[in-house]
Image: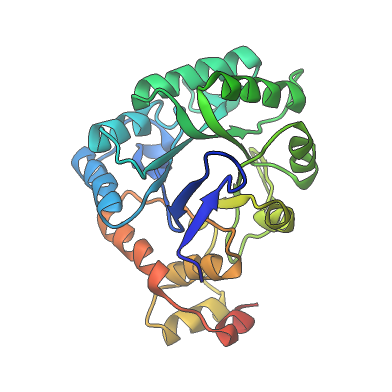
Length: 291
């Protein structure tokens, strides 16, 4: 099981990172809104993650709003040379805490400039275009704006988030797609439909990502992963003296070398537990048993 992954490996500016990152969404207040309940612990989580070898952090300016970006800057600036901070654009929040598209070319430029300002960067190394529907703005227009800002130097690499297989195929024809960020876990591999829409699953695009050397970044890999009755993962956890959540992360790391999990937490203890999953070695028999 490789311990690192190289993003945009065929580009002139590849980024090699350790294969367990950290997603910051849960550092915010309830419903991904407002300041964290324990600001000092939130800052310590970010510092401990970096001290423990994490060098890939996922954020968005609509987390909070702007809460996680400000926490990252306060905790980690000036940034170490090997740290990759990945953000997302294409959405925003309303005062009622709803999530809505913010994806016209003008919207996307506003979001990129805001991320640059709040993170204190001159260039963002990796930006995911979060697909939230089109509403008169085509995928071609959205990605065109992203690639334009890439040519301007505001963005180093462009990725797609919440993307179907058909959308990824279109994206690949429009320009270099460095990464995909989709919901993916041991128990949730295909599209999840819910009251607010749908989240395409990682399994639907994994083979395409592997063919094109695209890192697939699973999100919500803990939140939706672990119905209590998953006997197989519970048994493997028992054999390895681990938690089911840790086995879920270990399964992702073993399932494909192109997976880069980013488990998030607002607890320092849970952060350490998640990071320990990278040390779990699942045998071929374990993986077969998990299915």
